Amino acid sequence: MERQDWDDAATFLHQASLLDSAIINGSLAMSAVPTSEIPDPPTVFLSEASDALFKLFLREFDAAAKVKDEERITRFFRLFPLIGKENEGLDVYGRFVCGIIAGRSRAAMTQCKPLVSVDEIDVSDQFVHVFRDDIDCSF
Image (cartoon, rainbow, N blue to C red; front, side, top):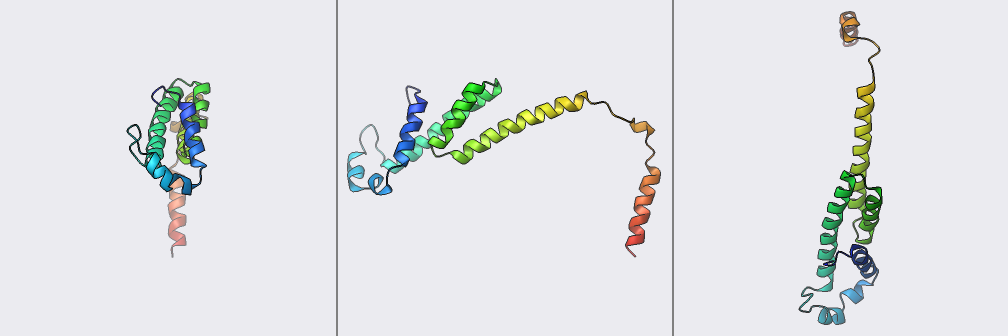
């Protein structure tokens, strides 16, 4: 992760997640893995690495989304499932897509011209009929 080889780091985490939990939590792993470089047990290390990568991927995804860099957006979107963050990745991508839709909707609405001016509408008769119908129905 220090070299920013995030694809390899995500692939490593994905491969580790495919291992049988008996191996990850086994006595050999518990005695061999905690080292001066990795002082935590394997499950703690993998969880913390996943969280750290998620923060990095989220930052990079947001930066790519801001400039609409489709290649980088796709790259980081594909990495979320590899680190066990499928739902979080879908949420992030969903917000990105909603932002695009909202922006296009706002642009479309500013280009629309009203069919009738507000000054041309006489709503007083319509309100009286609505209230009169409500009063008739309530008795």
